Length: 237
Figure 1 (tube, rainbow, N blue to C red):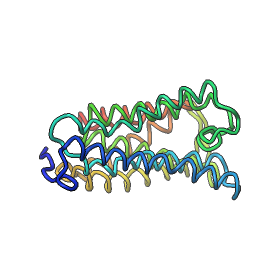
Figure 2 (tube, rainbow, N blue to C red):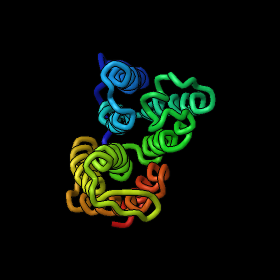
Figure 3 (tube, rainbow, N blue to C red):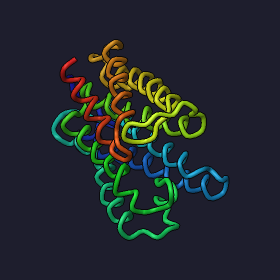
Figure 4 (cartoon, rainbow, N blue to C red):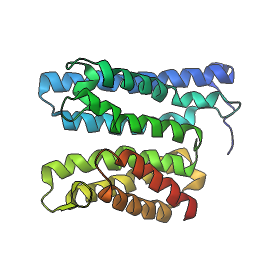
């Protein structure tokens, strides 16, 4: 992969990447207050605010092309997720019921939910931002996890009529939303971040595999099973 040569304002690479990291912080940390405002003042349902936050967090990979790959400071890209890992553990154990994260990132208002799927998400994001940094598998895993898994419950819980159950309750409509969201997000983010690895047929095939895995995954475990399926599929296809 070719490292970017230009930096903002001709800054040293480490300062350039620190500035990009700051931009990711501004973006990621602006979402919970916005969702909190909408939940509190405009009756946005918790489950929708949770999944909008989920989609926005997955979309943080949009900043990856800005990171300069020279040296090791590009690993600062995971800093925002590392901070959220600490915050989620703290909030999952000690937060009050009216905590912003509890109100916007949980289904029921139970702070302990933050120690499950939400925590798994940020751990996966750190793995994708290090072991699979700017690689097809990591980018596609985050795209599918963010958008496919974000859209599925929004559509499924409101419009799902054709129900099925393997290890948890799902709907055909939700699974179709997962597939469509995964395909479009995968095509966009892979083309945008790692265009040299773009393969539409491979992306669609992996999106289908991820949809099947999501459909048979236990509740709360899909934030682990989906990216694992994507990474394994990308390795062998």
